Amino acid sequence: MPAAHEVYVELTVNGEPRAATVPARTLLVHFLRDRLRLTGTHVGCDTTQCGACTVALDGVAVKSCTLLAAQADGHEVTTIEGLADPGAGSLHPIQQAFQDEHGLQCGYCTPGMVMAVRQLIEDQPDPTQDQVRHALDGNICRCTGYQNIVAAALSAARSMRDGAARAGGTDSAADPAGGREG
Amino acid sequence: MFPTDFRYVRARSLDEALDLLDEAAAAGDEAKLIAGGQSLLPMMKLRLAAPQVLIDIAGLPELSGGGWYGPVAGGHLSYTIGALRTYRELGRDTLLAGGLVRGRDESAPPHQAEGIPAVTDALAVLADPQVRARGTIGGAVAHGDPAADLPAVLLALDAEVVIAGRPGRHEHKPGPPHHLPRAPRPGEEPSNVERRTMLLDDFLQGIYATDLAEDEIITHVKITAQGGRASAYEKFPHPASHLPLAGVAVALTFASGTLTDSGGRVTSLSDGSIASAAIAVTGIATRPYRARAAEAVLKGAFPAPDVLAAAAAQVARAGDGTELSLLGDQHASAPYRAHLAEVLAGRALARALARAESA
Image 1 (cartoon, rainbow over the protein chains, first blue to last red):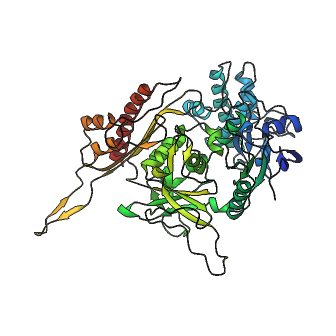
Image 2 (tube, each protein chain N blue to C red):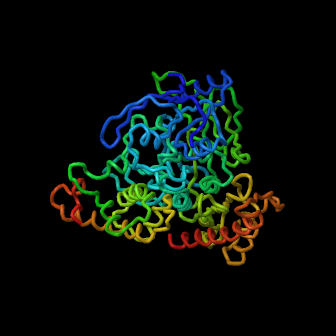
Image 3 (cartoon, one colour):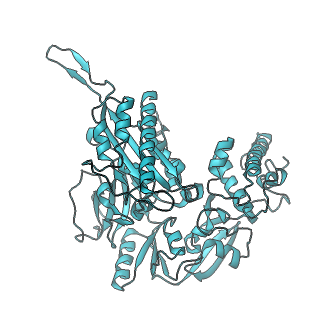
């Protein structure tokens, strides 16, 4: 296979198979926004610092402005649009916590913050405030609204733990509805 | 922002990747290898790098393996890490972080791994979680960034770089004995890939300059678990980029063993004195370096506060005691970086000693 200016990419985005031929230099964030019209993933600094473009690649939070669409070929991407269970008709517990704690001001950084908090809670279901702040090292809120963002992360972790505990006895950890009522 | 136009190809094997490098060279194209891309893509987006061909090596199985070997000289374990291992994966590696490790034989009791705290220190403060999920140890070494965190720790652990290329093209400098490459198994095709091993200290040459030739690929990084827990990494990060304005890694070993005289009397040599000290500094010179003048102060000495301070005062000096040429920019002047390195060396030494005592 020779090197080519155009690359055929096939990936799963929010559970759906997507395919397109794109210029090799297409960044994943532009593929998501411009090709797939999934504009919830934002471009902020565009220099790998602000985290507004955070998505999950094979379940791990990454910065989609620093990833070629070609590198995501064959992989699974979850964006902010795919976080909540579409069947449930409600927000994901992390989104709900950001709303409840008013974890946003202008909202531009919020999708990236939510996707970074998703990773944090998956890694550390019961984080301390310090751990939350450390885990959000790669996300910048230009409104400097960190206080409520941290509160939202802690609240989300709590409600997801409660949800998992309530669902205990059944197959709890994988229950997508876990913690939704919190 | 997006990079200048380039051609992209995904290599499926090490052999194919080496072919692709040769093809690009034959066509007069500048080729770059990409794995995580966390350093390369930002440079390409800023047009500081503009390769014509990008060869994606992220899926190469030959760059993924690794495990503990040893003991090597001095009784330390040696750890071979596949170049594609991400910072995130390494940060969650029990052998590096310390903890109970089970072997393949499930009936055998688990092994308590000491871990190498300097590595986990660096992995916790390096860049940010999203970047750590993509960035690889091979890239950290290949990039030759004078302000990278991990190379300082790797230098302090006497890391070696394993490099693959075509046979007969590059000189093999005699290095310490190593376990790669293995002989081909019966029935396997004879390999057209040759590996050379080089000390990281020889590999790093200057600002974005290394000994890696354009037709070579780093496959593994090898480290030695010197002294187990008595290691630490301390940095002063730039608040926006998280790069170290200065960073210092230390790894200490202590005198040990016993002497038995002709009368059968046994004397313990474990008197708390430092047998060896490895100190590496990043962010302040054209490349991460071993602070050998500071190391010499500690070798054979007792870790008293005045000795530690005297060693820290030498971290910005070369092995022969002369001043190193230091970097300064709009973020921090050269004298300020040297001052930070001295303070951080003191902190890293104190942390490594505290860990040795608690072990």
